[in-house]
Amino acid sequence: MAWEREFGSWTLDREMMRGITAERARDIMAECMYAVHGPHFAQTKQHMGVPYDDAAIRRSVQGTLRLAFKTCKGDYDNPTRESLERVLDHLGRKALAWGAADALVRRHRAQLARVISRLPE
Image (cartoon, rainbow, N blue to C red; front, side):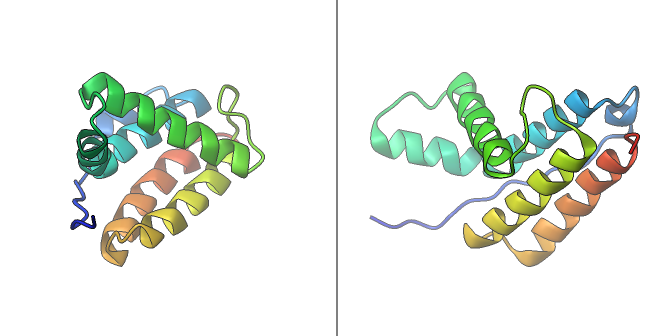
């Protein structure tokens, strides 16, 4: 059964930029994914008859992000600026493939790129 994909929205908060580390940048990326893709994860889980509470959705987001790091030859537990950049590119392509609007992907990618740009090279 196919259904219309629902996407949320996310906006970078200035407070998120304080004391930025690679780990914090990864976590901000996860928050963006949760806000944007969480509704679809919940809908899919509900359709499958499995728990779709906040914790379950966050686990799915974390699993998706871990897989993205692995696909991009990065380390989720020890992210670097370079691995975060690769993951951001990868997830942008995935979001488009999942049906997210180009403008939505561009906006979120630009916000996350701002976060990553604050990390040392």
